[in-house]
Length: 497
Image: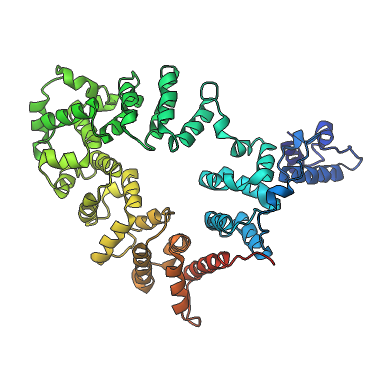
C-alpha cells in the first residue's frame, strides 16, 4: 500500500530511505534527482487520493463516478455557516453534536457537503451509532465513495443482499440484527436451519440479538440452546427463557428456587439452610443448574447455586417466593467486601423494569459511598440506567456530590441519552453547591458539557437568558454556555436563497 510506504520514507528521512520506485509508480510519479521533492510530491498525491476515498495503491485506473446531478437536485445546499460548523465538529470541536446536526440536516432536507464525505465516513469508523444514522443520508455519491475504500466499504453494504447460508459470520450477524426488527420469524427460521453447524461463540452472539423483539416464537430455539453442550451458550439462553412467560426451563428454575433457596436469604441462616435443602449432589434435578457453574463456583457449589438463582429468578418472583421486601433482600445480599451476591442482583434488576427496587438500592447504599460495590461494573450500569432516580434521591436527602462520591459524575458523563428537566436541574444544583465550597467546579467540566448537549434545549437556553454577562464565570461554566450557544446556532440553519 502506498500511504504507509510514503509515511515511512518521511518519518525515517530520505537520507536513510528513498521512496521506493514501485510506490512512486503506483502514484503516477517519476523518480527525480531530488529525493525530498519526490517524497513530498508522493505525500501530496497519496493524501489527495486518500481524501478522495480510495486506497492509494489502487488509484491507477480508478473508475470515475457517473454524473449524479439528479440525485442531489431535490436537496438544498447547506449554507456556508453550517458547513463551517460541520467542519469544526469533524475537526474535534463540538463533535458530540454530530448526531443532532445530522438529524437537523435530514429534517430540513439538506444534502451532505460532498467535500466532507470522506471525513464523515472516517468518523463513522469510530462511532458505530453515527454510522447507522449516516448510512441513509449518503446518497448515490456517498455510497459510491464508500465502496472505493476498503475501510468504508461495509458502510455502503446492502445488508438485504447478504445470503445467510454463504456469507461470513460478521455479515450474517449484521443481517440478523437488521432483519430482527422487521421480521423476527425469518431470523428464527435462518437460525433453526444452521444451528447445528454454528460455532459456540457465534451462537452466543446470535442469542444476544434475539433480545430484540423477543417473543414466544423464540422459545423452541432457546430451549434447544439451553440443551447445548457449551456452558456459555446455555448461560446466554437462560435469561431470555426466564423472561418469556411460559416454558419448561422457566418453570423448572422457579420450582427449584422455591423448594431449595427461598428461605436462604437471611445471611446468618444461609449456610445451615442450604445444607438442609442441598445435602449432596445426588439430586437429579440439580444437575442442569450445577453444570452452569464455573470451575471455581463448583468448589463451593451450594453458594454458587444460590448466586446463580439470585442472578436469574425474576425480581417479582424473588419477592413473592421469599416474602421479603426489596429492602430486606438487598440487606440480606450485602456482603460488605464480598460483593458477588449484590452484583448478580443488580445484573438481574437491569433486565427488568424494576423501579420499585431503585429507591431501595439508593436508600441502602447511599448511606456509605465507600462500599466496594460502588466501584463494580454492575453498580455503574445500574446507576447509568437509573441516573435520574439516583439524583432525585440525593436531592431529597440533601446529599452533595463530593470527593467520596464523585464517581457518580463519571457515570453521568456517559449519559448520552436525552436528559429530563429534573435530571438537568439536579446536576446544576449539585454544581452550584460544589462551586460554593464542596469541591472544585472543574470536576464538573465534562458532565456539564454532556448535559448541555443532551438536555432539552429550551431548558438550557433559559439559563443563558438569566445569566449576568458581567459576572465572573468559571471556565467550565463558560464551556457549558458555549455548547448551548452552538446548539442554538445549529438550529438556525437556513438554505441560501
